Image (cartoon, rainbow, N blue to C red):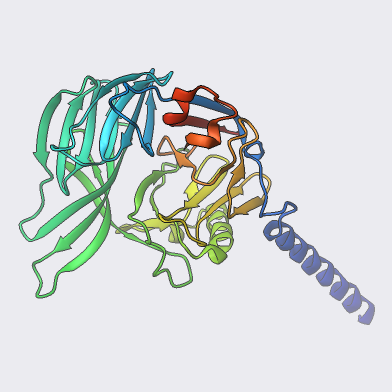
Length: 353
């Protein structure tokens, strides 16, 4: 009996030791998390010089979308259209009419649905002709502000701020809302966080619509300035997904806010402020290998030698293809043409599968 007890105790110790080793191996990466090259996560990077007309100067392009042979982008609140080679085609919106907050492309109708001016919705043709302007319908006792928009199949998904004025004190909530193509609401849920620690700083930025393509999970992305918790949060999210734990991903009344974008293989968070400060970072987690990078400078661009890349932005709601922009002295070596240096170079980053 004593011998059997000893053998059982040794077996328990071995099992516990193996489980501890697995946990350590999962949460401790074999790679230095403070260094990384762009080729660590990317198979290919495509450079697209943006050639404007000379009268229009594109500065800090944002919200880049590629649709067929077209590239759309926002610069200083104006929506522009280029072709896939970076040649300027036309200006879609006018600054005295709308300051663009976001947009989606409808290739079937060759139109753009554009957000701006709090609750205004504009429909434009690919040629920049205004087709329709409407107000987002709300209940009499509430106001709405649109933050971001994405298209998922035949549905439009937005993140919004709702202000309910029916009470003695106004109540402000953030929601993720599903509409049809004519902006008739289909489903509305409040945004909430389910991570175990206090998340007062999680919604530091206005939440952006994000979608996990394989599962169809709808969530809002908002990067956190609390970088020391990000790896812990990421592992918790991965563990919950492995267990199909719905508790972390909302319920019948809520959608989750997550501090990281969930791509097919790589989960990425980019936190940058203007002016830059010590809290800025680029974080990337490889779900296949269990390694991560926490980068104050960003990934080293070893494709075009343009320096460090800190701000990676997805060009689709599924976070599978990213982009970054460079201009000025950083692109002088790879792109010596003087006219190119005055305009930004758009780099499309095709992540490894």
